[in-house]
Structure formats: structure tokens, C-alpha cells
Image 1: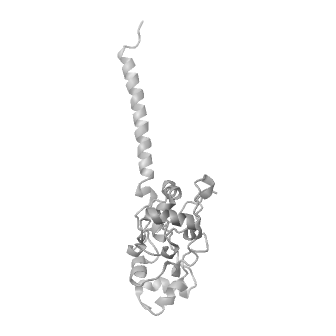
Image 2 (image 1 turned 90 degrees about the horizontal axis):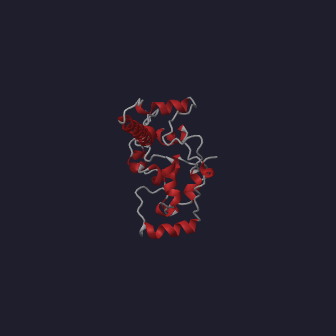
Image 3 (image 1 turned 135 degrees about the vertical axis):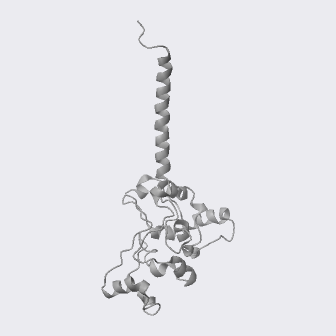
Length: 215
């Protein structure tokens, strides 16, 4: 005795196909979400104890990145400036501005401002600023045009595929060491010409092994 009709075979096939399509759709949406700005916080302004404007300090005032980020050339971390660095100028400039009271309070009480990291790599990722600077990677390459940011944001996704794009083709991004801190840098000759030359001169040999960054 036949329990199921012949059409049941077609329904079973359609059901299996539907499950596969649904699973693929869910997986695809999950991958899109993982790459979205909502997940990576790309292009998202971060609330700070005081809204420091890189645009004003870099473009208008003309401060060099190293004035505040003093260890960028010698340490794995670029460093966050102590309040004393701010007060070098602001003990004279805007010295009584209510906007800068958190800075003055921090200095008076010898209590560091609790800055929120904008480019916050996961704990399982090792990144060394000094190595990248010595190999000719400019601040702008990773951090974007900070001289045009009234509030600091994360310009790039910081995902592994973004890092690997540079590690696999450093000649597309390397610049002369004299231009590391230049915003809006444009190579004097095509990048396709100067890039390979600088890679050879600086001995750039980026690894793509997992252990390079995951330690």
C-alpha cells in the first residue's frame, strides 16, 4: 500500500532546497553584518571626555602627530598624551574656557583623562606602530585624513582582510619615511614606480602567517 503520493518526492526536494537557501541566506547576512559599520564601528564618532578636534590641532594649528603621540616611532603603541601635554599650550590659550575645564581639572588633580580608544584592536591581535612607521607606512594609510576630522573616527574596518590587503601588496601603500606624517600625501612619481623601490630600500617583507599578528 502506497502511503505517500508521488508529489511528496517533489515536496521533499523543495523542502531540502528551501532549507539550504535559508541557511545560505542567513550565513550571507551574518557575513554582511560582520563587515558592516555597525559591527566594526567604522566611520562612527566616539564619545570622549572632551571632544578633541584633530582637524583644528593638525590642520589649523599645525601640530605634528608626534607632539602628542610621542612613542609612535619607538613603541608598539602610539601613546595617548598626558594632560601635561595639553596644558603646555592651554595654560596660556583658552586658559579659562569652560569647555577645557575637564583638562584643567585633570591637571590639578593629577588624574588622567579617560580617553576612549577609537582604533581598538582585539586583545588577540598584535600590532606594532614603530615597525610600520619604520617600513614607510603613513599615519593617513590606516587612520585616514585626521586633519579633516573635527571628531576622531575609525576610517577603516580594521578587519583581518583589510590588514592582509596591505601585507600582500605593500608596494601599493608604502611612502618615503619623510612623508609618514604628511596628510594628503601624493607620490612625486606614480606609486607603481616608487612603491617597489621603497619596498626594496626599506626591506619590507610583510608576513601573512597567522602567528605574525595572532600571538
